[in-house]
Image (cartoon, rainbow, N blue to C red; front, top):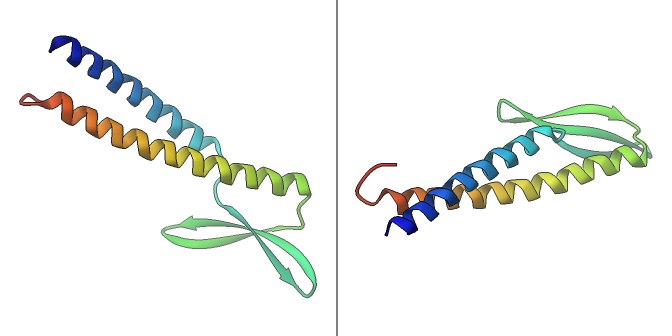
Length: 105
């Protein structure tokens, strides 16, 4: 029984470290999502971010393909890290419940 508990505690520590890493990587990514609008035949880009729960559009103008690609990559990575973070949080919750038993962790 003690062996199982020690393995669960080690897994909990690993999961907490992974959670911290995912949160750090998410913080490094640029905020918002790039939106392309066509106005009078010309394409302009806006960065959509949330402030106080409301969407806000920040004018970015005409962007190079490299900059557009950078925001697309960030969007993909953000989705990936959020999914991993969600799974890790569920695992942490499960491990804490499993370890708790009758005593608190």
